[in-house]
Image 1 (cartoon, rainbow, N blue to C red):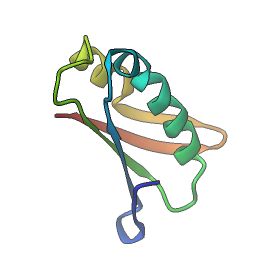
Image 2: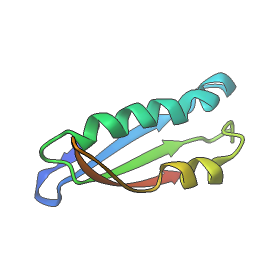
Image 3: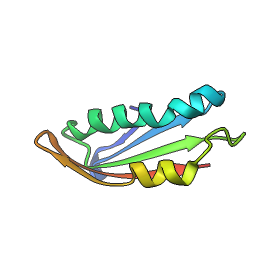
Image 4: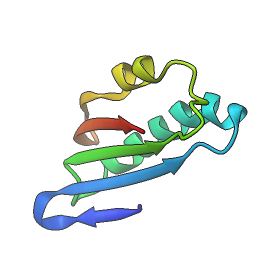
Length: 85
């Protein structure tokens, strides 16, 4: 967990894309993070902030579309918003 703002029930998870293989795996890492934070008692909103200065993520918009939105299960509910810079 990079930042927790309990008053807002918000977690900010940051990632830096290191190389092209990592750019291909970043979505899988974030899916794992989403599942983890959905169970966190102080997290209702998750912002995934990805710094990709060399544009190594081949389909950034597709990644955002896959991750963003409300996710609900018996373990909890979370709203995910992804930012890629």
